[in-house]
Image (cartoon, rainbow, N blue to C red; front, side, top):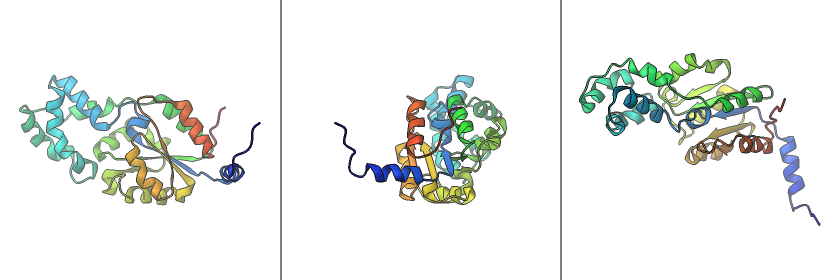
Amino acid sequence: MYRPCSGCTALRDDVENRVIRTIFFDYDGVLTTDKSGSATTFGYLSETTGIALPTIAAAFDPHQVDLLMGRTSYARIWRQACEVIGKPLDIGLLAGAFGSTPTNQAMFSLAKRLRGNVSVGIITDNNKERMDYLRERQGLDSLFDPIVVSAEVGDGKRNPAIFLQALDRAGAKPDECIFIDNSEGNLVTARALGMHVIFHDDERNDMEALMAALESLGAGVDHG
């Protein structure tokens, strides 16, 4: 015989009374099918130039943190990276690299459906050049608002600043927001601030599980 668990009624009431105003998506690994932006960029540069991926990575990896935090740009470090590679490369290759980003169409479709009930935004650790390109190329601003980029904030998802700016720009309280990311570590600070968080396994890309998690938090996915 089924017996309601202790506290189940209170939990159900909490979900029914919860107001979710904004759902924030991570970009790479959630809205894309590549795990990270560097995987996309380095992979394209390697395939296009014929230079081994480890060589490309060794040239650009030392600059990744500064790129993500907005302390430098590809234009500034390009020559130095090419010296490590041992071959001058056309910086114009970056446009192709950024443009090769594979979108997760199922996730974009979900975001469009969610927007009927809540606002949807992006919180991403990314360099400004790439996100500026992708915002225009993929029309991100027509769907997501706000879009908060680490390189513009000067801080990443392991610290509060980027989330606090996202909350301020969304005009929402932490408990009115959900943050979806493909890295458990990136959820820690958001959770500590009081945001609801969902881990999305980018390798499985289980959209049904994600929608169930959203519904359990009272997000109200439109099934129409």
